[in-house]
Structure formats: structure tokens, C-alpha cells
Length: 159
Image (cartoon, rainbow, N blue to C red; front, side, top):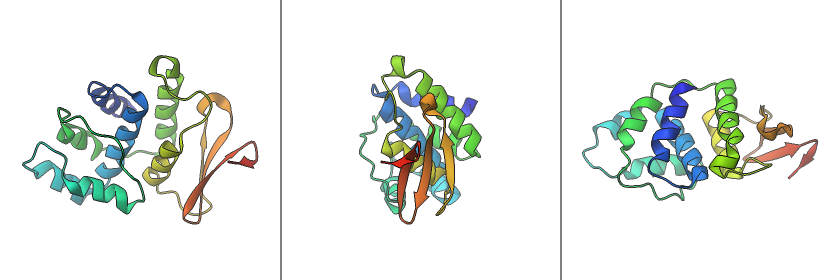
């Protein structure tokens, strides 16, 4: 989890909104899992993030809406992210660590935002009928991917 927090804190230096920082952290982790794309991004000569980064997110039905600060060194993040093997427990612990600081970070009180839910499902490669428990705020959220869309269940009621 140390590396996840390092990535989060590095991005946080360049972005004020910590929800955006969390989304960007998870997006970079997802992109970092693709070794071919990571290698392509690392050899890129441009300071700006290549279009292939955004195309990869779109391929996973994720729309990137956050303008990444041009001073952020994306290669530094990709180098860290490409070597991380993130499992469900580490991701749960990471999100819980970030969420527990929500008062300071101004994150959501009760629910994990849909954007984060989708990124978690993609990062963990959840398939139909697989789920992961989200202990955020102890409200028994469950990420569940059904068919092509993900539903969030809370105490047995879908939302």
C-alpha cells in the first residue's frame, strides 16, 4: 500500500480536488497493468500524456474527465504503477485509508462515487457475478458487476 499512497500523494501535489486525485491514481494503476502501453508511455518523447492513455481508458468504458496538470510527470507514476500487483485487500485498505481522511480531504461521506466503483472493478478484473466488499464508512457496500454494467448494493437494496 506504500506505493499506492506515494502515487496518490505525488498526484495530490498537482491537483486540489482529492476526488480527482483518487480517480487519477486508479486510472494510472489500471493503465500501468498493461505492460505494452506502459512501455510505450515511458519511451514517449512528449511531456503531455499521449492519446493512447486516454484510448486505453475508453476501451474499458471509462471516460476521462479530469484535466491532468501539465507539470505532473506521468512517467514517474507509470514507473511506479507498472510494477504494482494490486489485490483486493490492498485496494480496500488503500481506499479506506483515503476515505478515513475524508474530512480533511473533502471526499464523500457515505457512498463511494460511481467513478471509483468502476475503476475498482476494472483494476481487479471483476467478472459477472463476482463482488468485492467495500468497507468504506462501515455501511456494507458491495461492488458487484452484473452483465455490462455495475450495480452497487447496500444492505440488500440496489441503487
